[in-house]
Structures are given as structure tokens and as C-alpha cells.
Image 1 (cartoon, rainbow, N blue to C red):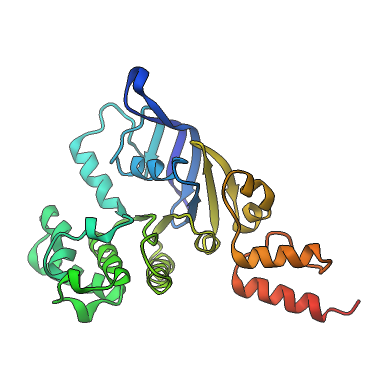
Image 2: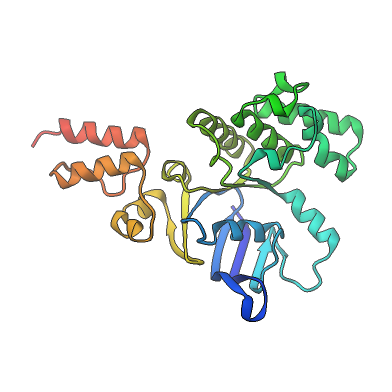
Length: 286
């Protein structure tokens, strides 16, 4: 794999001068093409601010930031560069109603392509394929307002996918959904990540969702607090709780059993992995 995102001593503040409110401090990180990274943090930690810097909804106030080899913090970064960046980095926001703009699903998915000037035949092909990928083909002629929350979010994802981004950022995109809707969205984007090699950044406050990623970043008070595999990060159970976070429920169950004397791995994540570990521990001969 090659590097897709790189930040060096990145910082951002809301406002200017004496009224400036710092949100990110000295962020340095590297994310490879095709990585699946979860970003955790309590409300106000800076995780969504970081996401918005990656496609220049916000502009960094310090440090340097590169996406796919292009420096976003270069003073000569142009409007053409911005247009190209937003084709590469697609964002799906928390509330799909803020991202759906048309009265018909297929027209909504085509909206970004129309703005890009994609020819009609190519646009039709991309819309059809994007709806197929998210399992919404049969709803192409429906009004978005009549869809469930999970279905709306999948339409929002289709609108991003139609632009063929190299990276997709989910910014608390499951926060307003019920458990079934959350599962639908996660299954969709994880399949796209797996089958198409899309770089996936999932910003969430759900520990069980973060555990599904290959890498977890924890941002606390504007700084990177932890960066590692889910097992490495969630093994720091007590420290996470000190900064207002928790661990996945299955990890908590394993920890309770460990403290009761059962021989189980530290930081176990994933329902299947934890269940297998418990079965092995219970059936092992002393």
C-alpha cells in the first residue's frame, strides 16, 4: 500500500485572534490507501474537525496536510485542486436529510455528477451502479422523504459513490439510525471497502462500530491519544474510561470474566472472536 493521507503538526482553531478556540493541536499521522480506520473521541474532541480538514470544508490554521500526494496547506492550492480533492474524498454526514437535495432518489444520486459535467450516458450508468452497490435499485423512482433513516443514508452514500472517490469519510453517519439502520450502512460501506479498495474513515462514538475497523485512532482534547489495532486500543479499558470513552460490550464481558479468573486475552474485540475465546477458555483442560 502507499500513503493516502499525511498530516504533520496539523492544527486548527475556530475564530481568530483572542477569540480563537483551539480544536486540534499538533496532529501528525499517516493513513495508507485502502485502510479502514475508525476515529473515536467524545463530543468536542476534534474528530469531526479533522474530517472536515481532509476535504477542506475547513482549512488548517497550522501545520501541513497532504491527500493523495497533494498538499492542501500549500498557499497555491487552487479552486481546481479543491474540485479534484472533493472528487477523491467523499463525506457522508450524520443527518442524511442535510445531504439529500432532490425529490427522486436517482436524481439525488445524479446531483454531484451533474455538477461535475459528466455526460448523460455515463451519469446514468454511474447512478445505476451506485444504487446497485448500496442495495437501493428498487427505490430509484421513490421520494427520499418516504424512506427509512437507513435507506436515506444509503442513498447519501450512493451519491458519494457515483463520483467514484478514492476515500470515503463517514462523519457520525450512523448516529441518528436505529440498530438495523446502523447495520445496513456499515455492511454497505465495509463491502465497498473490501471489494473496491476504498480508503474508509469512520468517525463514530459507538465502540462496537470502531471495533470493526482494522485501526483505531482516539482523539482527546484535540490531540491523538491512541493509535493502534482495536485490540491494542481497547485493552486500555480503564484509561479510556478516564477520558469519557468505553469499550465494546463483548470486550467488557471478557474483562469481567478475566478478573474472575478465566484465562482470556486482553482487549478481545468482536462478538465472534470473544465468543470463541470464552468457549476455548471454558473447555481447556487445567
